[in-house]
Image (cartoon, rainbow, N blue to C red):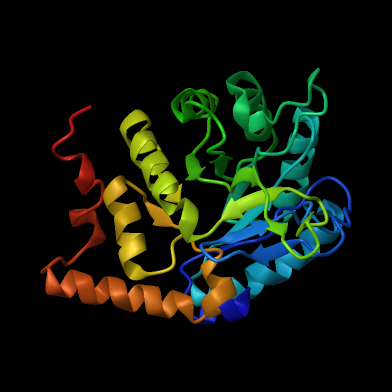
Length: 282
């Protein structure tokens, strides 16, 4: 995380951690299929108890660099989310990202929290009661209408939204073996292939709510990041691009943004933030 910060990232989001250790799925878990990645890691993590000292050390290394730490969490119950948030707060992250794409095991059919406005709001309220650290709820594109979910979590106290999580599940089949390439058979799709969907989601959310939006999904260049900003993103997340270009991608994205802004005589991102909405009133 420190290495990525020194390469130019403006903030660092840790891998999601949950209530207990999880080994995740066996390999293969991630594949580059061309226009993007498909993955089914299975939320592998050491559990929140072991994660806290790791994040404490990360915070100590990032703070002198002026780079905030975002701690991502998940759980399978409302109570589990609250407990993980309470424990992770001991590491004093600057923001807690709430990954609600996991199934709600307490629900009759195990429906993911991200697809149920009521359940998403319950999680948000429980976490807000458990910590004083600001939270950003990470939304899934796998719903017919993202806006009601966003309204529900913002009304329940979310300080920000992260959009979007991976799309899917998807599947890639190896022709020679006639078998899915992932050990889990299906997985989340990320990377450039989902960027237009992510941009649309950020645009819709920016029109619907008045909290900051972290735009994520397929950003690999400065132009991609600027597009997210024009859609209304306050911050822009980069994930899959690190797979192809390494941590140096952050400096490259920032330089491309600077070059474009200089060419168009724009001195601040605030001048273009949400610009795509100007001819489209609420």
